[in-house]
Length: 515
Image (cartoon, rainbow, N blue to C red; front, top):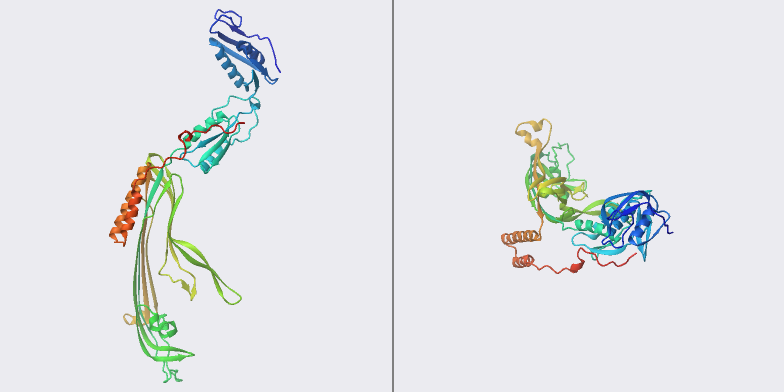
């Protein structure tokens, strides 16, 4: 409804007249002086001053006070009027030849659909960040709406990500869209990369020495190898070797490794089996195992982006056995990666420092442990070394993230009590085993911050030269083909023109839909 009131306020002209305006004054300058005046009265005053038609709702009410000792123009007075409305929680909406004054909370914002093309950031990842920004928790409607701050949105905002064009679709009012666009520009920056080079050095020594003697009383047999049915001594020392040496089904003399010298007096039968009639067995064995592992896994990833590299084999491991009704044995296997695993997440910090969340694992198949137990296949045994840590290191600085130094000496003596302790003669009644295990493992990491594209090209060129040197040193056959391929990779390629028009880069398209 339209309210018309006489107003008690004053608008003084340049000569101090109490009339509103003088027709011959150009430009018109006025001073505003209102003390505790009803808002509808002030609206009527502005209507007469600007010759604008206003429609006000019955909710438009309140008191205002304005002090303006300086003279201002009519346009400036109208701007003061709009500020007063905003302060009181109202807004002026032009509708044709009239201006409606409504509560700000009742005015639906004019929203439009805009498309923002990203240059560096990922649209789906950026959508997750912006969604938390535009989602406002429900708050009770205040009795009096204050001036909206710069970080607040005046209306609902909807965001969508288009993966194919790497763009954001934003439905918001013009004011909210401009605020969002400033945030997006600051987030849509080129991300730096980190090239990490790891060096894994492991030296393992395993030495085994076994020496001893086993003796048995030879059995008296007849011409057919049967044990004579007479009273005769039997027995002796048995530390595992003489049993294998005498049993042809266990390999006989070929079933022992190292030096095995036995004194044999024919054969004898025991049950349905035939055995060598061994009187004495001398055993001597020494094994030396040296393992030298040098691995240099390398990986390039973006800042704050998880990366992983696995270099190894996918080995089968039995996990269980079952027997069918027909008596067939079914073995269930599970395949696992055996080799080198490097998993890291870099974060570039200030002063050219890099924070690295690192997981490093080295696993190998143990050659010194049998994959059978009691004749049953149980699968291979793996050696595993792993490190899980978080470090801060400077650019191009090498750091040791983990290490292991192990020195084990295992001595085992199997002997006949008392007789095995006799000096010199005691070796006839004992076997001694001595194993020495030494391991030295070190893991080094070196991060390189990649800021410009030419640095990536430099890394590629350096690694290509290292590969060429390897091909030349090892005299790999047909290495010319490999070198030719490396040369092609190192040739500079002109960047392809962007498929996105220049007027669409980092700028919205024209609104597609308006509400």
